[in-house]
Length: 384
Image (cartoon, rainbow, N blue to C red; front, side, top):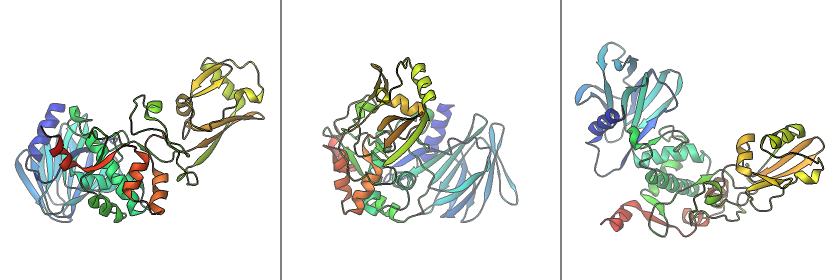
């Protein structure tokens, strides 16, 4: 199937503009879609099967696409247009974006820029958004960065998301597309329209990416809140990166996700320790205490230890940055931060932007010994 997908996508996008970079994003990737409605919101779309033009849709004209075994049935309000093996919905005006509403299963309507490719796979639709890089980045920034930040923060997030997309360009290439729309890659729910600062920030930084000292794109990790100290990449992902080193961050410590608390019954905690090979021989409170003035990797108890990453996963905690205290018949976890802690702290970056720092200041604070460059210039520099 992957070879079919790749060949169909290649055929449909071969006429894409040479002056804009396109990505193939698998959209609604967590849904088993059987039927959806498509309608241009701005611009005009031509509907193709292979290279055969089926119809042209103007603004607000509607078609339904329904899975019929291994094929796609297309209907307008008035007539059935036919049954086809694959469909491309190609925008042909200067600016094109469309409404896509899943009927089976029901999913809230979304807007998508540029083109949509439709294939049947595994008894459902396989949808690819062939989208301009900057349109994609704006959509990701809205999902990953929220809708109420300052424009310098959005510029920062746009550069990070663009860097991530290009560094991971081939992540799903064997499946016939570049990236998925889930958090496995970057969250993406289509066109950004909620805050016009987001597309403005994206296009103001168009083409800018972050590189390390060897001019390679960085792994642009980010998280919600570091709790006052970011983490070394090797402590989380086992891979050391010169620009992903732990730093002290005072910008995030009074923000929304800076602290948290979890209470666990002591008997359950003992059972958990026992399950992980640690026998509780003395219930004195001091035996269970953990104090993280700076980030640690392990919780040591009764001369044995368990990784804080494992505890975070097993108990669904916000971070590995927490203290442990036994209080009466409970274990109290007093935590700091939200997320893995590597790279840019989003709430810290938002505070920096509100305090007057530029996107350059923010990026250089969280990613040490890096540079911001234009990807087109970078391609010229690195060309053989």
